[in-house]
Image 1 (cartoon, rainbow, N blue to C red):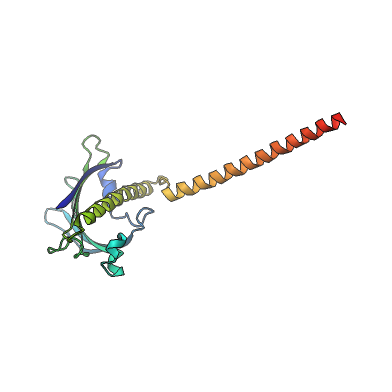
Image 2: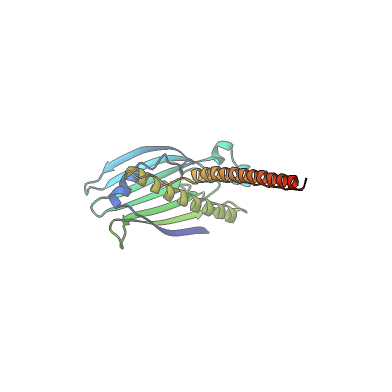
Length: 226
């Protein structure tokens, strides 16, 4: 049994800008789970298409029940191959990614794959200045007894990483276009915390001021009766 994901996203930047940002995505505030990236092969075909293969290492914290099945170095990291085909004439970029470890946990066929993903980046049909991303993913496992749990976990993790990917893309695009990148969740939370402290401090000072005024007024009233 295979879990299937189909999604579509839009980046409000041109295809050329997205293509340039694709190779500069890491690091960014949303990609702390990406540890390394290396280009292991690149060539230009006779029909002027750019073929590339990258090897990425990412953290991949598993649920505790899965960690007990594997050594720590396997349970906490995953190696990913990414093949890409860029067609500048038709303004399309297609990427294929798949995991090359966790063979026992997921499909045991060769090559072992935890998650397979296919993305197509193309010009948005409604706005030529935007880029559309069509994303498909397949999550599968043949681990006896817990395959469904593994698939559910893998799909949930994949969806979470898609959100991070899009935020990271937007961050890098903003930097490349000379704009101020949108604040990260951590930065936003920090600012909210500081603002809450300032509000609480102001409220405390105001309460003290009101209390002092009330005490002064009461003292004045008592002196009138003396």
